Length: 218
Ligand SMILES: C[S@@+](CC[C@H](N)C(=O)[O-])C[C@H]1O[C@@H](n2cnc3c(N)ncnc32)[C@H](O)[C@@H]1O
Image (cartoon, rainbow, N blue to C red):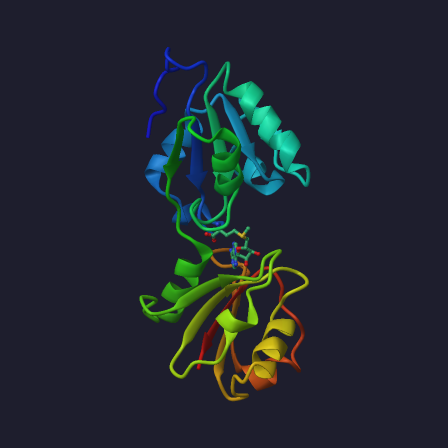
């Protein structure tokens, strides 16, 4: 999507949020690549900027201080085309949420990306229309949401603290069976991608894998 010219009724360029998929450029939409190429200012994590930013593009690094990043975007959009790079799909736990809250009725456009969850289910060749997707990335779903349900399929984002060891422990404490099938997927789309097939009961004995996807089949 070519970003529209500055809207004369407003004082700023629309903010374009682009999903860059799970990591490898093989899984990025051509429309996303075109939008990234046409940006004056790119906003993203260090890894994304290293992968995509050209020398002449101004950069804003997304670090721990999100308020500073939002402020930087607000200033930047007054004078140039800003493209924000987010991993996976923007609609699923990304900076889009904070941008929508900060810029309320201001124009924000989105180009979708392949979510790490979509990628995980593709790798396993398991349909996801009945799966329950939840995030343990910097948050904890409630016990009620995690309660055992016969036939349930879960797709879970993890982080360093809530990982392939601690989450199975939690599910077992909530009545899930030790023999429930568990897939631990990490570094999806990269050369060192890893997919481990195990069970909830075994996973608590294995080394923890963080920042990946867990797929649990009751
Ligand atoms: C802030 S969330 C972003 C989710 C993203 N918007 C999406 O749609 O995939 C970051 C989490 O996504 C998951 N993730 C992102 N890239 C991944 C990859 N290449 N392989 C496995 N999991 C990944 C991990 O659970 C990571 O902690």
